[in-house]
Length: 370
Image (cartoon, rainbow, N blue to C red; front, side, top):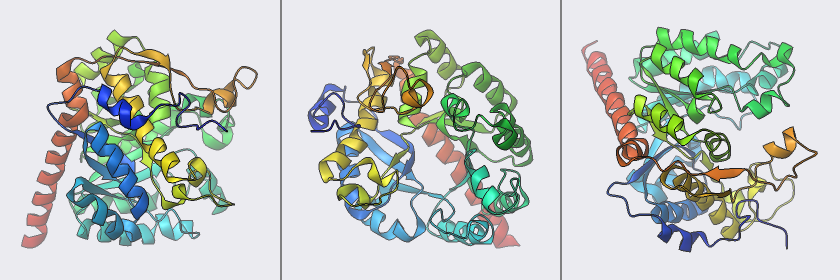
C-alpha cells in the first residue's frame, strides 16, 4: 500500500489531537483556502479537534454560500481574484474590481494581492512580463478600491529559497528573491493600511531580513502559514532566535496553515490538478487537513524532535541525489512561552481584526457623508 504523504508516520490524527494541552483560548487560522461543502465538513472536524475557533479563508466567491453553510460565523472571508478564469488579464484587472465589491458586500475585510514569482508565467502568457507585478497599474487600481472600502491587505511575495534555487533560477525572468520586496516596500509606504505578508513574509529562512522589513514598516504584519515551508525552515532556527523574533514583534505575527480544501480531495479521478491530487478519499482528505494542525501545534508548543509526518518534495527538488519525493524534514519544536503563544495563536489576529474593523467603520462613515 502506498504511503500517505500527509501521514508518513501512520498516526491516528484524531487520537493525536488529545495529546495537546487544552488551551485557555481558541486558535485563529488566518490563512486558508476553504472550498467544497463536503471537504469543509472534514476540515471543521479537524478544526474542532485541534482547537481552531475561526478561519480566515480565500474561498472562491461562487463557493461562499456552501462553505458558510458548514462553517457559519467561524468563517471570515478574504477577497481574491477568480484564479479559475482563463482570461487572466480580466481576472486580475476589471474582473477583480468587481469581485472585491462582491466580497466586501459579503463582509470580507481583507483583500489578497497574490504576487508569487509564478505570476510572471501568467504575465508572459499575456505578452508582458511586467503586467501582473504587485505594483502594476491594475494592481494599484484594485488597492485603491479596496482601501477606499476600508479593507486591509494581504499579499504573497517571493517563495521558498528552494524554489529560487530550482524553479526560479533564471533571474533574468523571475528576478532575485530580494527584488520581489522592492515593490512591496513602496506599496507599504503608499497604502498606509494594515498589511499581512503571508508565509512569514515569504522569507522564513531569514529572520534578520524580516526584522528589518517589520522595523521599516509598522503597518506590516506576517502570517506563519504554509505548513511544509514553515516547519522545514523554522525548525532550522535556534529556539532562542525564534522566541526573540516573536517577542520583538508580538502582536504582528499571526498563526496560519495555508490549508487548501476541495471536494476533489474526496474522490479518485483521472486528470486531477496537482492540488486536487493530494487526496482521493475522505480519510486521506482528513489526514491532509489535520496533519497541518498537528505539525504546526507541535512546532510552536512542544520541544518534540523528529521527522515531520508530511512529505516535503522540495527536498528532492533541491537534493535529488539524497532525497525522494516522500522524504520529510526534521520537525524541531520551539516550545514558545505562554504569552508569545497566545499572541501567535489568537492575540495578533484579534488585533489585526480590530484594526480592520476600525478602518471599515471609518470608511463607511466617510462614504455615508459624501
